[in-house]
Image 1: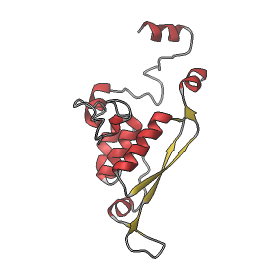
Image 2 (image 1 turned 45 degrees about the horizontal axis):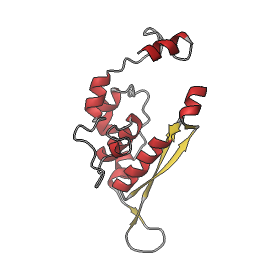
Image 3 (image 1 turned 90 degrees about the vertical axis):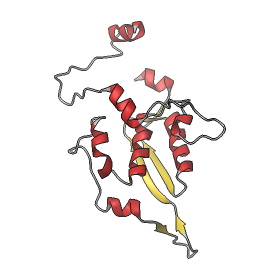
Image 4 (image 1 turned 120 degrees about the vertical axis):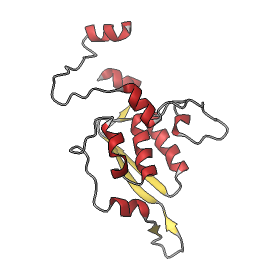
Length: 164
């Protein structure tokens, strides 16, 4: 707490005015519980099955939302969950054919029988951490028919976070 107060005094950390446009009041407890961000059972390092493995028991919100979209087979089924993190209907762009994309399999284009991995572009505006990239890669391993293409405006590490 003292560190946050010192950062605020130095002008490196600012509290957002609740009356400012775009202000969103986070209910951390509700978000944590609804998205299951903290793995209460602990992490099984021998046979990991949850993205919290990458963060030693914690799942980043960004990757957890992506996991929820994949598990629900689209954005539409989890609209209420997305509202918890400030993604209201006016901010969501739900593509046409969303359910068709998630409920179909991509045929091979090389003439071989079977199906190929579906490619999903994940774009992080503002940056992504290496740990989030690792969590997305782990999520790909859990879903073998999906391949993420990760795009971002920057890679965030400790030095770049402090520099901003």
